[in-house]
Structure formats: structure tokens, C-alpha cells
Length: 136
Image (cartoon, rainbow, N blue to C red):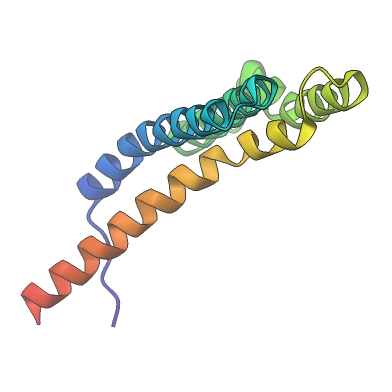
């Protein structure tokens, strides 16, 4: 039998996710710099910025959709939704064609939000086990 996570706990988890993303981005950039590849560090950092920006835009869009009592979304939100992926594809293509930075490093940076969300999910799972042990 599953229990629903209370809203305040979800709000705290949602507030922690950007911090985890920033921590993963900094750790990844530091690791690539220590490995001796400044170009890869720049590529990873650019990808991380794009990935975190994508997370924020998606989060804002969902908040607008969930909180608006109107049938129409604001134009700015629609533009953000439709421009996200073309901008990212154009950016990756630019890095791929010019070779300024390794495109693999950029793509690895794009995975930073997923890593931050994964870390937060592990924390929530651990909290669920701790609460289950207390209740059981």
C-alpha cells in the first residue's frame, strides 16, 4: 500500500532540485578540469547551463499551466515551450560543426538536471523508508 507524499514535503524537494543540479554541474566541471581538459570543462559547463535553463523553462511552463484558470497560455510561455528544442539542437549543431568544444562534453552537461533529479529521488526514497520503519 503506497502513501501520498504531503505537499510541503514535495515543495521542499522541488526547492532542493536546482541546488542538486548546481552541485552536479560544479562537480562535473571540476572533475573535467582536474582531468586536464579545459575545453571539455567549458563544453560540460555550457551543456549544464542549457540543461538547467531547460529545467527552469519547463518548470515555469508547468506552473503556469497548473495555476492558470484561463484556457489560454501567455504568449511568452508558448514561445519558451516551442523554442526550447530548436535552440538546443542549433547549439549542439554549432558546437559539433565548429569543434570549439567536444560535443560529447556538451551533451554530458545536458544530463545534469537528470542527475539532480535522480539524487533528490534517492533522498525521497530514503525518507520514505525511514518513515515506513517508524510507522511499521
